[in-house]
View (spheres, one colour):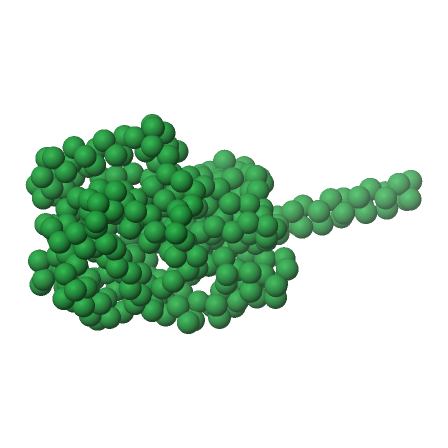
Length: 338
């Protein structure tokens, strides 16, 4: 009897230990914001999407296995992102680090080599073959082409420009080339300039580059440069230029100056991707591409500022283009010939 009692006690202790170990393994998620949430609606959407997913997951848990969430703002100094991402991974406290920026897969590769157990989910990025990483890429061919097409239709000088925060594969191989193609297809003979700020925050440099573009005869700009876009807007107002906006409904930022907006639905992507992770369904090492046909990219053609600023004939042409992309009647090539 004493042996039986001892065995039962050991089993009970083992069960308690297992229960404690399981509780300790409740999901732990970190969101790494490459900027400041208050200054970037797109990053705010990422944080909101992950938070909504965690809240939804936790509401269904009756066993105490509630996920924890930590949101870290890494600031606008890109030189510090690698150090801060490394420090976050080094804690070992988080099962996955979720972020959003096209430049992050490269940093994730570096950090992952130091911490083989680290896992990363990067939105608005593309990388395949790394089992520590999963990425979600928006169909930015469509997005860039639409922005270029609008710039080409609206330009009076047939000269348009893209101001980038930095160069990276998606920028060099997709965003700029398809923006240039869209402008040229809308108005044959339209040329597209390309210039780089060097970071995601320098509004003064953004204003300086936009001024140089204006001096070169460019009257339409697509800024993809984070906080530096505020300098671009200021120069556009000063010089009578116009802007096509990326990743957000930005009409309220500069009514009459911003003439079109494409938006990627960061919050939806962040929520769905996080829920999939919490369900154990993340396909590590792959990239998922989503776009207009999936409901992850939209063009704001019903905003009052758009209707007031853009002539009807141009709005009609843009509506036809968006409809063709959405239905699949128009499918852009995966690569453009040099």
